[in-house]
Image (tube, rainbow, N blue to C red):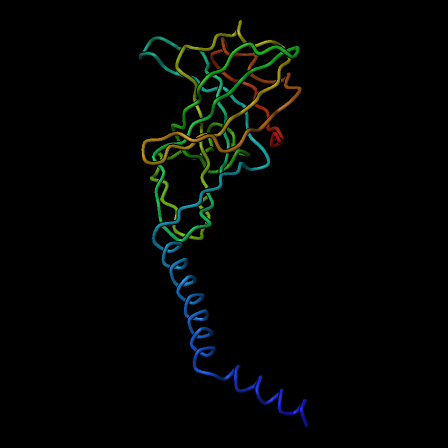
Length: 217
């Protein structure tokens, strides 16, 4: 009988207005927190992740300096990037660039900035069939992924054939520009390169190489 009365008292306490009010306040607080987070995520949260495709194409582009003068070849990189926005806010990027370091015999020979100047369709195409278009604005809608394929050029006449050894490695840092600020996202490596960028001085045809790249941890 005593135990039964105690249980009744407990039930009465649990159902008292004070306890019910505290519970309702807790539930309201949790609901308000999630509503606030959803609002922030939808309108203020832009969370960008940038990743490269599995392969890049190393090639040489020919630059004409005039109607009668032929310029030297310029080493270029063709590389695709996926821009993933896991936040809810739509944002745009101003620019993309690569910081490329060439290493040979475990020694850094040079580091150059490669700027994106064209978009392309596929690295499998050769020069006459490769479709190139102007760079379009990079607008990344919330919770979506935008894929772009860029041709990257170094500064004109900044890399000479004497600066590229017969065998070398490349380290590639991927940077994006957002609201005036550059940010490094990821670093990739290509090792044991020996069959490309050896014919900058040729005027007709250049070798290319499609290489696997690996993210540097």
